[in-house]
Length: 308
Image (tube, rainbow, N blue to C red; front, side, top):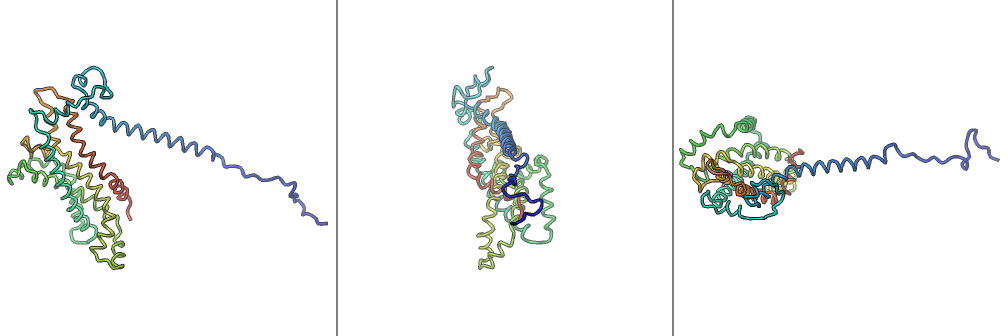
């Protein structure tokens, strides 16, 4: 007969120990769900607040003039009309729309291509090479960005006039390029600095030449950064008003922001329907450009926030 140790409890009699759930474990998923729903509602309200001015501009452009200035509020175009767009594009007493569109497209394309090429080369030189005056060059970029463009309006006008380049796409493109280039160089410098140079060295060890290693390994990683920087350069060149106002003085040489100014006259009431239609026409190329590059732009913004 075997004797059990003193104080031991038989297995048949010992109570089963059931682990208790931690306090609050059942409430955590509910709290997380409520928090996510709350943040989702906040995000939806913010998105609606930012999108409402755009919707109101589009809604106003599709309403007749008597309804726009009437006492009743129309939240949607219940009496749809395209007369405002016809007035904005083909009105004889106002500067023509198509020449202004062509000027804006030419200037923006020139600035976009030139700024990307020059800024990319400058950012590579500053990041990949060590030379005398490198820190002074980077500091000068910051100093140039601090100077407002309005402070140089008279000097720029006198310089362009002395070169006999008033009312030319080349003159306006050079002025825009001088204003956009410091920002694009500084932004691309961060993207290039975030790509390790060891990737090129590893490709060169595997048999690639330096140019081939750069175009096959480094450049694809920098492409999202180029797209993100190009979007900002595009917006600065497309929306600029003051320099275009003093350089492009002829009606047929206006850019679209200056063309919109012709809708407001001191001697006549503002045609708000045509003005909103013109604003929609100005915004359409920007929306199309964003739809084409939105995927690359998102990747560029995320990759530019992480180094290494």
